[in-house]
Image (cartoon, rainbow, N blue to C red; front, top):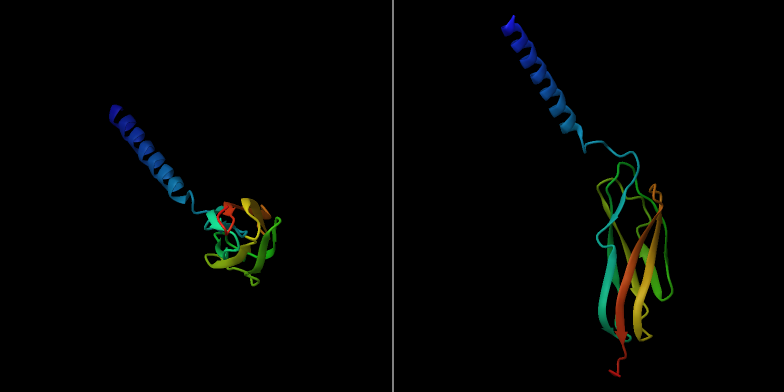
Length: 139
């Protein structure tokens, strides 16, 4: 009787262990049914730049989801020009881009934003632009 109880407990332990390992192996593998927009940077740091300098930048946009990503619009706060972005849908696992530049005509702090509108559940992604522009004559 003691052996059968031991065998039963051992069998239950093995069963629970297998069940637990099976559940652990399935974690993190749930596929997304929607697009998921990720960028290579959430903040663009210009540091200190000289007035009238070239401030062109490119942000890489990745689709980490399970459906095509569509960027509907990229808006900017004052002083930021967004000349182009990926207009075609970005398939899951692929990358796109957003090209922009900052108007460096006016000395002072840079503290502006790019707002990316897409078909992701979060709908918007904000990229912060920070830095400082010094006058070209050094004053």
